[in-house]
Length: 630
Image 1 (cartoon, rainbow, N blue to C red):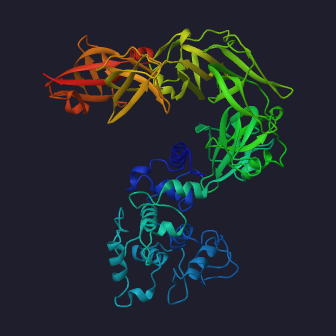
Image 2: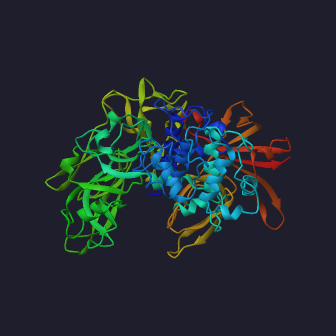
Image 3: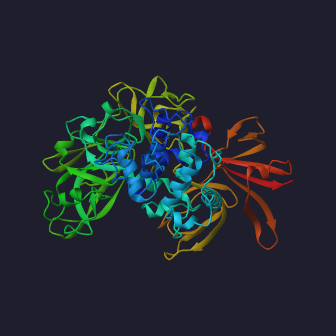
């Protein structure tokens, strides 16, 4: 379950900040609160307030320690016996205190009491944490409590971010930091404590928050006709749908749901693929993946794999709908009738593909490649050779188990205008909160964040397809090469002409792209209008270069922070990662291009040349800057 993790942690961090207002700057590490929230170590009140400045009782700290241990699933909020005279079996912390006693971490006072409501002092909390790491009283027999314990606490750097000294009470913030430091500390046996709990550590030796999320996350479950609360077993405090802030009411039937009870957070995904079941990978006896309409997917659940296995309900050639989870893996398989609806899309191209029929025989057939409004690229067989062209709008539906493809007209309402600075509107239309924006060119598709289009003028001719939701907002927008971000960029450093195997003139292209050399790419059947020594945009795959063309040249006057100014006083933003090179003539080698940065060329010693694909107002960007010494 460790894929598409960046978006998942982003959502968790958002949910943590919702439950913990204004506290992330109060701890020494921004990962402390999300990690402890996911583990159930630190919880807020009914309003989500953590009260980090308040002191912590001995009972409350014992609960925090147990939640960060292998005993977390054994403890309950009550016990069948009273662990101490002042902790009755029905005390809210009785189960946690009893667990701490059984683990050998917790001690009472000589009078047989635990004093659960007394504030925990630094040395008491440290003593519990050291015992969590495997140390016992015998390890400190040569000294007087708490001096050897505090010495080890400092030597192990468990004091990071904690201001309290011996004899002082700990705040909730300091308790959280101490537990986090304990997770990253080394046990008596020499192993990072987080590893003993089944988590992983990052390159810095700290607990990997992603492994915590994966360990605590539950699901997937498929929504039925019931409520979200009944499905997950709690009233969600935060709901994310397709990795965007949402609500419980937005989660509908057949959505794929994941949830974290400890933070009362839900992630729902509404991603569906409908098409023909072409093959199972590696086979139908034990499938780990499936090919539907030319696209491959991995299974996330055994029930989904079983449904398309040799003994499952679906056979090769059947129309099916895949319900995809957070990793774009298959969580469930249902019939298209259960899913409902049809798919609209844009033709990317055509070709001939290899297939296997229901009897296992291989054959070839023409196909049409379609970019669906759901963002997935599909490949459907078709007998209409030469009928469809790139950019055609089509709909794909199923009729008696057969895929039906037909042209459709452009949406009746004209859509054009400028995207506002906040990237919330396009012309007079509002972007939906979960808007899906795609941009394509040369059979390459990318997903575009709405803020990428801030200030961009979009004409009707730039839009391949769009859909409005029930509120009249733009829910789906497919653009035709507005951003240009699907291409790679660099400097064409060599264009070698050769004689190809067919006797015709061919080319070998070599490109300096960032800090690496791309190519050489041999092109026997294509000659591109690109010039050596100029910046280019290109597209290449494992078979070679598919397209290469010059960018637009412009003379630059200066670099101004995150922008460059042209000699015509036009400004281009360059805070997204423009490629910068210093060009030098080297005897015997010609012009060489050395990777540089904006701050190294902003001293007036260089003549600056910029290369862009189109104006920023049209969606383009400055892609390459070349500096030459004056």
